[in-house]
Image (cartoon, rainbow, N blue to C red):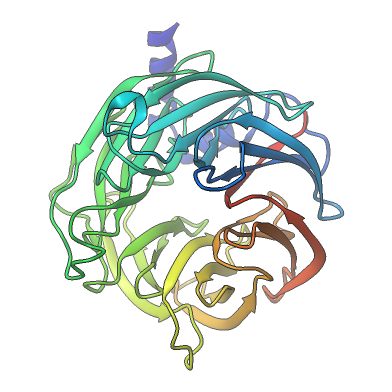
Length: 392
């Protein structure tokens, strides 16, 4: 059982990246064509939100239909779905879980027919304010970034989808030049490299992407002597997205509202800076609060969200050099787009406007990358994150 599963995960990691990708993306049963359940994570503190909301998403029509509250939970801000599509994980972005100065991560079983979520268990993240969650490529471990705590942690996934205790933990240290926002470390994003050999932690307080070796057998982080990706001091990096070819990584800096393009060395996990480009119009002088970044599945376009300007920035990607060309910005039809998601077909972008309590659906022109509102806007209290599960 558990040992056998860990051995199987190790074999997958040592196998070709194509094998890993196949295991992570292939559902156990044929999915209904173009039919998904979209789960929306929210903030519940000081709002009327109940937790995680579910919607049916018809990708052929770009249509969302409300199901309702899938699970009541406290501040389930960021979500991640297991590669097998059976389980969903949410960070509870709090600072006082079970009486300690920690946040929590909740594990749920997914009912792919009804959209309901069944709570399996909750565990402490060992740091306050967890704001991002992901799974390694084998689905054996959940990875969490604690923003307020300035730390990262990993948790074993049991056969039933529940979470075990912490397998890996690293406390970051240091600070940045902005004494208000960078008085200490603030881990804001964590994920593994395309081949699952490295864990990457984006730390807003340190202006760095910290690269760790990742032991997919034990779920441990190994400190690296090199491989750090650094951005301009005070830029405040927030999230990272890899290009589908694995040769380039794009780091979004919140406090500067910019994207830094890095070349990525698969063998060493090292980054080399290639370009930094603004996500905002040249004549904009308002708040700079970039939030989310994603590469289109085609690899041709990159999108970022701008809070303050309340827009989605669009970039064309040079596939050979990785460099970006700005294609302008499109207003999101709401206030404070904290997150957006590209649907699994690559045909639609769903922008979540946190402070106007809505999600606006855009159609993506796959030839030009442009975004056109479909006319559909749904009301969701304080939306933070959207993720999709194929309907079986």
